[in-house]
Structure formats: C-alpha cells, structure tokens
Amino acid sequence: MVAVFAVGIAMIAFMPAVYELYYSQTLWDSAPAEALQVRDNIYATFLAL
Image 1 (cartoon, helix red, strand yellow):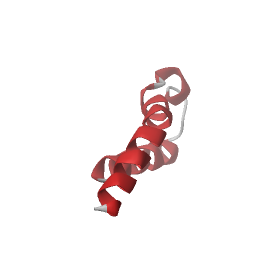
Image 2 (cartoon, one colour; image 1 turned 90 degrees about the vertical axis):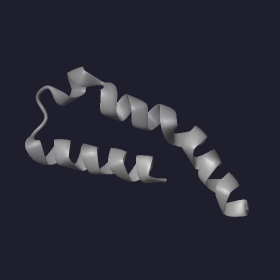
Image 3 (cartoon, one colour; image 1 turned 180 degrees about the horizontal axis):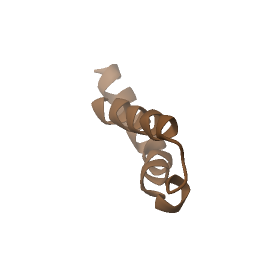
Image 4 (cartoon, one colour; image 1 turned 135 degrees about the vertical axis):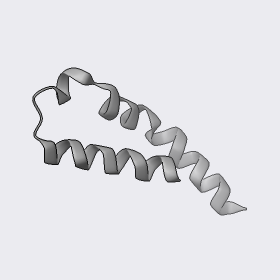
C-alpha cells in the first residue's frame, strides 16, 4: 500500500519536469540522435511507473 502512494507521489512530483523534457520541441530540434534516444528511454521508464 505504501508503494502505491510512493509511486503516486513520484508521478506528481516529476511529471512537470518529464513533460517539459519531452515536449520542449525547440530543445530537441538540433539534438543528436543519441540524446533523443536517452530522452525517449527516460520518458518510457517514467510512464512505466
């Protein structure tokens, strides 16, 4: 039960940062492919929570 609340708190705490990381398109226009892969992996891991 505590784990469910911990995941919920983590989602609420980090969602603004992850959203900005993923949807800030001007930041990613000139980024190398490796950086885009890292971004996608971080986002997918966050959503898997």
